[in-house]
Amino acid sequence: MLRFGSATLAKLSKKALASSLEQLRREIGFIRALSTVTATKEAKDEKRTPKSSSQKPLDTKSFAMNLFNGDIVTDQILPYPEALDSEQKETLKMIVDPAEKFFKEVNNPAKNDELEKVEEHTLQGLRELGAFGLQVAPEYGGVGLNNSQYARAVEIVGASDMGVGITLGAHQSIGFKGIVLFGTEEQKRKYLPSVASGEKFAAFCLTEPSSGSDAGSIKSRAVLSHDGKHFILNGSKIWISNGGFAEIMTVFAQTPVTDESGNTKDKVTAFIVERQFGGVTSGPPEKKMGIKASNTAEVYYDNVKIPVENVLGGVGQGFKVTPCVIQSLNSFKTCLFNTRGRWP
Image (cartoon, rainbow, N blue to C red; front, side, top):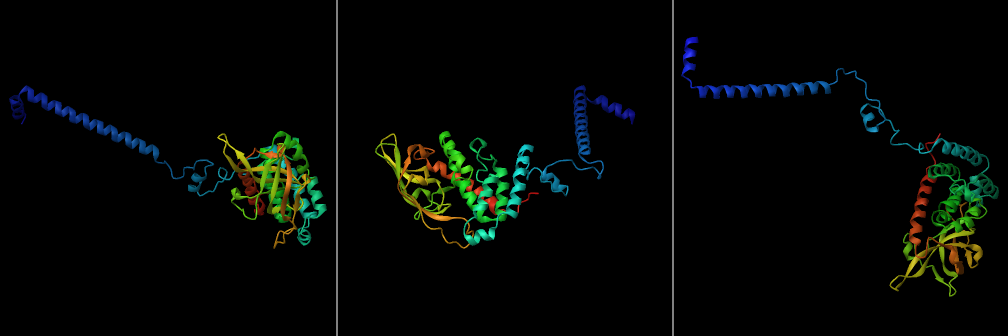
């Protein structure tokens, strides 16, 4: 066999032999490369495969990952009230405890409902608690709560007496909210101290007999006087909370506005109106099926002279004021009706 093989090889040309050897080398190289890839893949798979089924799960706050571990960890999806720092929490506690005690021991919701108004001693107690200016900055005589703190305070009121809740909410969540958000420094210094103390009540006057959610269709109208010092307001509003006794009102009316091209068009403007301006009257309180302690009434404006300084947010800019105030109202209503809070 050996001699036969040698003879056979001898017959092969050197060129054919070289070609065969080269082919063999390539095949061997391919096999080695394939083996290397296979070994590398197996090593990676081994690293990914847990060495033991008793390996401990990752310590994480992730809500989704903990679901796979059979746990519900809500730290990252329900952070409230962790939005408050330690000082804000302490401030809130100083308000919550006395407020809860007040509504248990002083306020009488059944009596308020029977009288169809909040008792005066209850209103005075709320003034002493600072409840009329919870989100007004301290420099204007308020408590200075942020939205999270305010939400907690509103829950306490709603859990006790919705009539008181609406009275307070109509006063500060919308009544003078426009002054807080859009008022000039002069307007804030003039009006906020008296409403924050509860000395004067506020109301938000937008809805009319022919205009509900479509604020652009309001008919109340304010025209600039000849001397340019006042706007003369005429019109009426319906279903106004605190409308029967509010002294300070945010009132919306159509005003003629001339653009740069000289075209005049009616646009909605917000005004700060005082009852003492004259020409402001209210109808009797509406008879309601529930929440009777909150006052709801029509308000009428007959040639009311409003100083030009009392324009709120700019002439023709009423639609910039309205949505921001309404958003505040929606937040207030959510907290007011969520009377079974998750608080300790």
